[in-house]
Every structure is written in structure tokens, then in C-alpha cells.
Length: 317
Image (tube, rainbow, N blue to C red):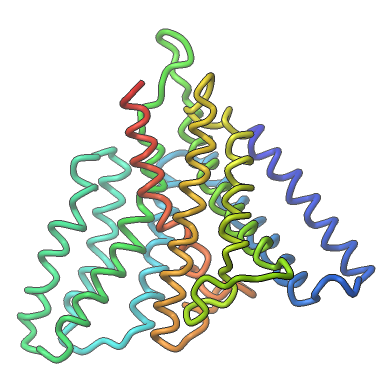
């Protein structure tokens, strides 16, 4: 609760700052940048309220919440690319059975199953199912599209609620930290959101060096390096909300750096997909931010890496 309280204070301060800047506009601040920041703050309020409610209602509700987000994100991804009648049976399976089974396995903590269910069994099932339809036109493209959508929107994102199933170290002999998993998940989501915001803020520096101009003109070296450095320091300061406490606080800092780099990887990859499809957003559900997938691309790419790094660390203890 202390971590959520600290975030509430920060969001409240951000609201006050935005309100003051809008009341007294300065020529040094771009109105478009200020409006983008305002919309981001509002999106964070919604995200915080949703996550906090799910946490209070228990682990099952949290897993269900992420499952619904996965379903909506997958819908946006598949809708963005054309399909053929021969894909309909496969898409029915992909939208109904696969996400449900993946999140049931995550909720049960069946680590040995949910890490291979989609990338092994489902990926092997999709090509023959499409082939059985008899439609061979753009076969590889259609197959790859469905597999990539499942990988990013369902498989990768499911590692976020999977953090709730990790066995954390005991605070004292025989005394487990029952709220530690919730703090760990909230820490992860918070650091991801801060990484996106700080990379965007640092990218507004006067001397910009765009990394890949043909893909995304807002992703700069200043944003990547400055945002990663800032997030690393913030993650180190929040070591108490993670299992990387005590003399190993530096591990929290390292995790912050890893999350920030994966957030960049997710953002640039999804930008490339949108460029390829000739669109600016995956959807229009979130005001000022496009669709759900536009808001969770960083979460999707960072979740499996953070999960496995954390699990590896816990196994060394």
C-alpha cells in the first residue's frame, strides 16, 4: 500500500504541475508536448485504479484482468492485417481457447506448461490448421502474423501476472511475505510506465539524435540513454518493493535498466509493424493514445525478460 500511496502522490503532483502550466503557458513549452503529458497522466490514473482494484480483489481477478487485456490487444493486432476465409477456424481457436488455457496455466502456477504451451504446441498446430483449409495464398504471411500476434499479445503479456506465482524468500524463518508478489508486479508495471514517460521526456531535448528515422522519429539516443539512466536510479530507490532487498539493492537497479531497454525494444518493434501496415495506432480505445496495444507494447516485451531474470535470481538465493 505504501508503494501505491507514493504513486498517488506523484500523480497528484503531476496533475498540479500540468494544471499550472496550462494556466500560465510559457513560450518554452510546446503545447502539444504538454497535452501529450496530460493525456499520459490521465491514462496512468486509469491504469492505477484498475490494477489497485484487481490487487484488492485477489490474484484470480488480476490474472483475469490481464487475460482480458491480452484478448483485446490480440484483436487489435489481428484486425490490423487482412485475413482470408481459410483462417477463420484457426482464428476462432486463437481468440477463444488459446488465451484462456494460457492464463489458466499461469493462474495455477504451472510453470513447466505455460512456458511452452504457445511457443511449442500452439505454434506447431497453427500451420497445419491453415493448410487444411486448402487456401495456400500468402500462407507464410498469414501463419507468421497469427503466431507473432499470439507471441506478443498473449504469451509475453501473461508473464506479468505470472509474477504473482513466484516463490519469494521468507522475511524471517517460517514467515512468508504474502504481499511481496503484489508489490513485485506493481513495481514492474510502474517501472515500465516510468520508462516510457522518461524516454519520451528525454527525447524532447533540443539536440536530438533519432535512432531509426524511418521507423520512429521520436525514439532518440537522448531518450534511450537518459530514460534508462533515470529509471535505473528510480528502481534502485524502490528496492524495498522487490525481493532484491538488503545488500543486493543493486539488483533492483539492474532490473530497472533491463526493463527500460526492453521497453525501447517493444516500442520500436511495434512502430515498425505500424509503419508496415501504414497506420499510426493499433486502435482508438484510449483517448490520445490509440489502442490498448499502443499502451502495453512495452509491458509485453519487458514481462518475460523481467520474469525470468527475477526467477533466476531467486533460484540463486
